[in-house]
Length: 157
Image (cartoon, rainbow, N blue to C red; front, side):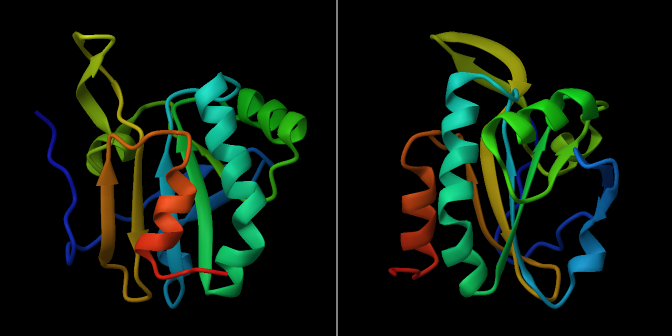
């Protein structure tokens, strides 16, 4: 079984390539609240629903001081197409080696259609300005997750 992050843990730092050809480093975002969400595959129905939900709620999340970063094992070109197709306006990072996914507890054993398998566990971790885990949710549903997250964070506008 994989080790999951818990409230108060120091969030593992990372530097990953992004869909726009740049990179993103978690420690560069110190001083901000960061919502890091992990999803299995760009362009699939559930992942598209979730990404668009974050996109549609981004102004509100940013207005409450939250930066959003999406991470998947997809290649940068696949992420670039996903960002363009869905007009995503926040960083989408590529973790093709799955090292960040594993370090954050978002890759490992999971049930898929009743079968035990290994893969990306749809997860969201909120990191506080000091770099510590404020909230960690694993095995989340793609639909309705952002609304639940907003409620958990006390964002009701």
